[in-house]
Structures are given as C-alpha cells and as structure tokens.
Length: 638
Image (cartoon, rainbow, N blue to C red):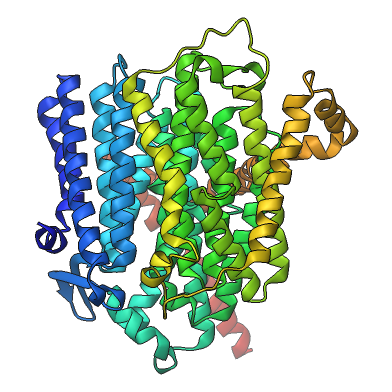
C-alpha cells in the first residue's frame, strides 16, 4: 500500500475533486449525503497522503532526489509543457498536513453549518478548495502550479463570499480576489520571463539550470524575475502591502477561515517561494527583499492585533504576522525553519480558528472579546484546547510553536541579520501579549450575565481535541535532540543546528513577559482600568494602530482619487477629443453630403435649368474673355 500511495500520489487531489463533481451533479439535493461523500473522499486522501509521506520519510533516496512522474500535455516550438507529480519530503509533509486539517475542518463543519440552506454547496466548495491546494503542492512545473494557484484563489472567493446576502461578505470576496489578481499578474510575468529565457517551466530542470544563469541572462534580469515571482506570494500570503484582504476574509464561515489560514490559501505563497528557492538564492537582493518584507510584516501585523476587538480579526492579523515569520526564514536562507513553522502553525492556528468558531456558535456570533468572559466554565473543551493553541503560538515550551519559532530566530541570528532578529524578537513578545489578551478577556474573568454559552457538539469538539494534541506534539520532530525534521526538509544541505540555549531563554522570557503583561492588564485588573488608561495616555498611537495604520483608507483614497480620477480624465478625453475628432469628421462629411445632394434631385426640369444656367455662365464668360482678348490685340496693334 505504501508503494501504491507513493506512485499514485495524483489520487490525493483527485478524490476531493471527484467529490466536488459528485456533490454538484448528483447528491446536491441531499445535504447529509453530500457531506458524507465529501468527508469520505477527504479521509481517503488523508490515508493516501499519510502512506505516501511514510514511504518518503523511510526511504533515504528522497533526501536528495524527488519522485517525478510527468505526462506530456502540449507543445509547440519553444514550449513543451508536461503535467505530473513532484513528490519529495516537502510536498509529502504538505499533503499530509493539508489533508489532515481539511478532514478535521470538514468534520467540524457538519456541526457548525448544520441547518444552513447552502450546506451541500459549502461542502462542494471545501472539496474543490482542498483539491486545488493539493494539486498545487504536487505540481511538477510552474504552469501547472499556476493553474491550481488560480483555482485556489477562485475557491477562496467563493467561500469568503459564501454568505452572499451580506454586503460585507460580497465586498470581502471581491477585495480578496482583486488584490490577489494584482499580485498574480506579476507572478505570471515572472513565469513568462523564465520560459522565454530558460526555455522550461519544469521545477527539476530549473533547479539544475538556475545555478548557471550567467549562460542565459544577466544578474539584473534574474533580480527582476525573482521580484516578479515574489510579488505573487506577497498577495497570496498576505504580506505587506497586499495584506489588506486577509483580515476581511473573516466574513466567510469560520471553518473557511480555519482552512484558509492554516492549510490552503495563505500558505500557498510560502510554499511557492520555498519550492523556487533555487531562483532566490542566486539573487542576493531578492533574498534581502523576502527577509525584510517578512520581518516587517510580522511586526506590523502584531502591532495591529494588540488593539483589535473581534476574536477572528485578532487571529487574522496573527496569521499575517506568522506568515511574515515564515517569509523571514526563507529570506535568510532557511527552508528548514520556514516549513517547520508552516507545519506547526497549521495545527495551532486551525485549532484556534475552530475554537473561535465554537465560541461564535455558542454566543450567536457575538465576536467582540470585550463582551465575553468566563467561557472556560461553560465551554471547558473549547476553552482548554484554545489555551493549548495560545501556549503554542506564544512559544512556550514544549508546545509546537516554541520549537519552530526558535528555529527562525536562530537562523536569523546566525546569518547575521541582527536588526531583523530584534524585530522578530519584539514580534514574539507582542504575539504572546495579544493572544493571551484575547484568551483572558474571552475565557477567564467575570462572566457576562447576558451571555448563555454552551459547549459545542462532539462533531465540533472532536477536531479541537485532535488539533490540541498536534499543537502540543507536532514540534517534537524538530527539537535539537531529535533533528528528524532538519534531516529531511532542507535546501542545499541538511541543517544540523546545535541547541542554542541563549536564544531559547530569550524567546521563552519574551513569551512569558507578554503573557504576564496581558495577565496584569486584562485579568488581575478586574476593571481593566490600567489598560484603558494606557490607551488614553497614548491615544493618537492607539487610534493609529486600531485603524490599521489607515492602509485600507489609503487604498480607498488611491482608488477614488487616482484610479477613478484617471478613469474620469480618460473618459473626458475619449468623449471630447477622440469622439470629437471622429464626430467632427463625420459632421463635415454629412454637411458636404447634404449640400451636394441638392444637385442630385432626380427631376428633369432641375437638370435642364442647371444645364441652361451652366451654358449661360460659360457663354458670358467666353464673351467677356473674347472682348478682353480683342481689346488687348487692338491695343497692341496701335
């Protein structure tokens, strides 16, 4: 079975794709059957992915060479495109993680979406979403990857705007789609340049060619290509300045948020940069761009999260920040650290989003954490699993986030990026602070008498328990004493880093300090007077951060003034200049035609009159001409 799963990995994305078709064309009138088909196919994909991953990680051959199956798709002069699978430790890890999280999200959705009129449609979208992401992961060339990349974007649009009766959901879906299209256009240009210059989009072939790029093009062109390719992930993975769509994506159902933030849409950008590291490592300025963008995004989003009030919006900015961590690791050259954090983040972020969904389900979608309190008593499973997620993302040992975050900090420090290391360390403190601010406000403290919370059904709490176990133990495969992860997920050569005790102590102290400050301000202080006093003392700064640095307003101003203004000027130029010239030429022609038509009346008497007048004019003209000539001749004779 292991060998079968490895050589038939294409079945992993095919099964959820088939469930999408079955639901749309056959089972849609029967909601429960549709959900059963979707979950069964997703669990089948998970089983195949687990077997394939087991086969990869127990065969030393895969440490350096992937398993590639290509089938010719189409070709023309200068362009030959294959479709196939690319199975190596990185893609094996990804398909295992995506199928596991997607399966848990679908099981959770049976309880969360119960009674919704779009129940079967929702499961069909989830299936297509998972199929698109799995197809992207296993793609053996950039064109095939781009097709699935766009399909992932389409699915996110459909799911973010699932509640289409809400204006906010429709607007959020359009915002996500348009923002990512801007980034994807740059990615497409980069791919076209790669095909023109190197003659292939095959990942394995490019990894062999790129180290010798001097034979094909200049360093400047390589830098341009790398930047264009990177802009695609900037949009997809919510990096500054194209991060604005991600917080608004909360308008979709909560299981969608968990899937987008943990295992599909946003990690696609990180995965693409990791998969094309052979391009970025050849261009040092591009590596610096990736690192600086990631570090700044991590800190920038963390500062916004400390002031937000809605539980899902706090988690959304947390995702933006954590994705910045992953990009930072890639920018300093550590695929190991980046994908390790991608792995652990998937579990604790899915756990926290599904936990948030459980809270919203119990409080009839009341989202403001300041209006919650004491939920841990009435919702113990949701509450304590959420606490596990909070410990993991804060970086408290031995939870999963501690090991992966420390790997990023260590890689950044060892590569000599001390400013970025300081920025990432500050982000670690802020992360612990805002997550535990949310936990203390929502789950601890005084209960609100107007709330009547209740624990969610087993279909929702079961996945929370599984994810809590993974958020606790998933990082143990990458500890310094057990570097299993580092031996398999790497770029260039395996990473065998020794434990760095000072870095561990610093990161743990920062996390503990963040939790401690949150405790003092939001739990020990019953009235939250100190927190309100701080907000009042730094009112301008608080307002700036609470309004997300007015980036959305800046984009809105740009659209209204620059884009709409340019469109208005272009419209006026078209109407009064282009159309004026065309219409003027037409008017002159029409006027001439109307005047000339007078000589074409079709009446014989008119023609006779014109003929007579013409003869008369000619006669008179000749008479005067002859008289002048005679006079001239006679005068000459004298």
